[in-house]
Length: 346
Ligand code: ADP
Ligand code: MG
Image (tube, rainbow, N blue to C red; front, side, top):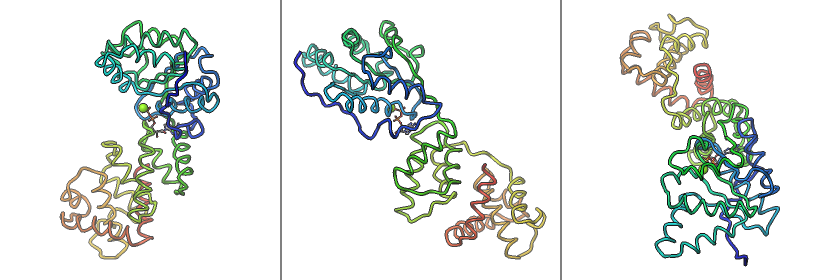
């Protein structure tokens, strides 16, 4: 059959070099590299990579294709999402070019279909894919698939197709562990040429656990805030951004606990913190306790005031504003906020 030039649709930014290895992805990554070394020539055919959202399925799928193109420039590689594949098939039926569609796919040496779970319920598309798959497989061509579930858990996919999916290797991408999350963050920062204090990186890695895209998202937001709003990389900024990514995971702490932590930090007892004195450092400690109570609990301003030395809600509101202002303008004060954030959230 005559070869025509087919655009691979690969994204060179997704490669093995920038895919950080960890326990959570070692099998999938290694299998991907093995396939890239010998497309169609391993028993990993098809190679099915499955796992939750944002864990790197699309990244690995491209990386395999990019590596193959690098090693075997003459091979025809095609990356396509299953939605696009479905759409092309539907169009071909409408325009009476179903056979051309099939022939096109049968010419490919390495076919990468992303998110095959979207084929569920689409029997016509599954049927045509079944024939394409058989042709490619019989001719020693490589098929790479990704899915958000393992084959056993896929629904509304024909049995004969599911059994094909199980012929090769199914490799799971799991959520990265803490060390891997740190490496991914450091890798991203390094590539972007950004230096960020270690405690901030640790804070992000501790709080974003199940989605690499979100890990990257926090870094991207931090960089944007720093360059557009001239904000420095502080734990406080990280905390604000992380909160936007992970909802409802705020650990609820008690106002009692906050007062204890703040008092201890300033080397005073809780009674002093609550007292009526106007001594500056005591007032500041009290304002910080109110600020953290507002931020970390669901209590109303009135309730916070009554628990921190019987103050009214306006005093608490004023305290929160004062802390916000001082955090922006006073380095020493910001260190208090950062230190206390660490003590209260880690
Ligand atoms: P999925 O397809 O599983 O939803 P993606 O492949 O789109 O996830 O990955 C989400 C983001 O996380 C991408 O920007 C990808 O580059 C990045 N990513 C995921 N895993 C890793 C890893 N191990 N090392 C580096 N980046 C990663
Ligand atoms: Mg994806």
